[in-house]
Length: 429
Image (cartoon, helix red, strand yellow):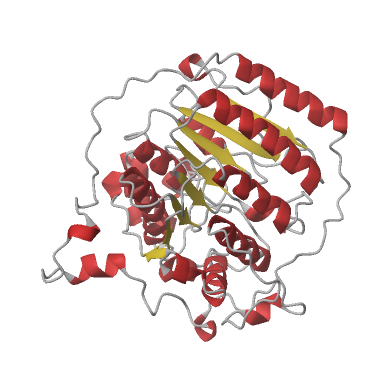
């Protein structure tokens, strides 16, 4: 058991200032709200806060096709009418609109997940958090489901430089299809996704029969659920499956996508999870004491997203938070109760005991097909593309370092949008 986990937390206020559009359910402003709530509970005092570097195009092209990255780099709302064929080719449009600063937005959230993975690799922290990340639908050559760059795949590729096996866990209400697809043919990554499946629910994949192929056969695990699953059913199933996965697969590191659209009352979701139920999954994964990269994901009732990810930051810090929300710049969003708790979900639970039992048995049966952890020969670890090789403890304090390097390591005071400048403040839906 580690004495005390060292937590690195990545945030750049600019990520919360982009605007997908008035009617679009994705509100990056939820990230500012989350950060302010984290600050108001003084959780920042227990973590190391970093502003991530903006991922370079060449870093994004570690997974994505160079032509797709280049297109995202140059497209703007003013020029998009000139590129109608490319917009179709790269699946940009209604779900994935072109907005101001789209590429910088991608660079920041992807940079956060890449930096998080590198700090874990260099053993500079035990847990790394990037609530701006977790955009699990993006594909190699196209955007999908509000996601443009798949930061999770990039973070996992980084972790694979140091770990023979990486486990990916996804508790978003939507199937983690982009991550699964990226690693469908390899045993170096096991993907486990708990999600709503059926009724043409997006993205339409994630049946229990999808188990991986070739070397990756049995290394993709899908837990398809029906509407209305509650805390007890979800956490019981989660713990049973994840404990067996860790025991069988023996990962060197874990990536946990904490999409908050699986909470009760989400605008796009259909589950009945409370924040306690959702965060219990985070707590359970933390107990394995493996290097852990935690990201956000979906979540479209933004005050509940902020509540959830703040509570989960507390869970990762072993800190229980008082239910009454402290004063902060976004306090009005938490009216009228101003509490962390959210109302119970009212959706009928269509997941019968026998259905859940069948799914569980199917998953455990597939895990039995993996006799033991696959033996991956470690090749020579390639050097990090970006992070300079330094030991913070041994640095000469008298040596001058450039401003940008300094900025990267400290928390900014102007890290967030003031409430008056919030381009989304009228949207309280």
